[in-house]
Image (cartoon, rainbow, N blue to C red; front, side):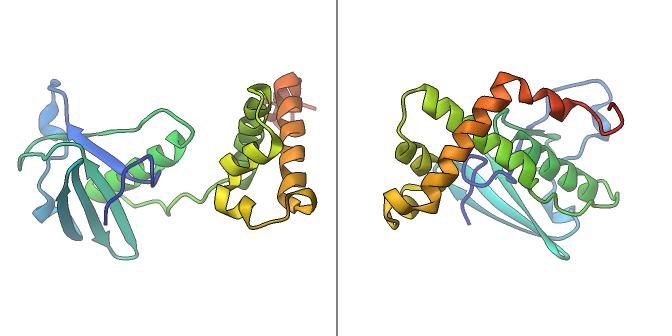
Length: 182
């Protein structure tokens, strides 16, 4: 039951909301009144919780325990998974504010491929071998389980490095154009 944004990108990080004018409209930390079933467990790194609703589980993490009634804010760490964290926070907010919850965002395969390409290119520029890059992207255990010289992962990493170099070399501009710009 323990998770944090670095381990599970759809974790919503809750913190005390800053004092702002009009704060009476803020959502307050009153999990017993939130729609769904709230289960929490304190850990050495904060409070981990799940808000179970019909068909969905919102995973929450509070770096410090929140007092009941405290207006809450969410924090989305800027990083590779910021879009995923933002979607999870919006989903929770819609649920708690009584709005329609949007379906859980599915990972965009094309975006994941671009991210992997850029990571592979960065690793290559940093002097990493194709095998080291593969271990970072696919996991060391998956790479160790294959004969590296004939592994499809080796070919995939080479393609990722090449496509990352193409993106950095200007190919990214085609991503910014709409289909109607041509």
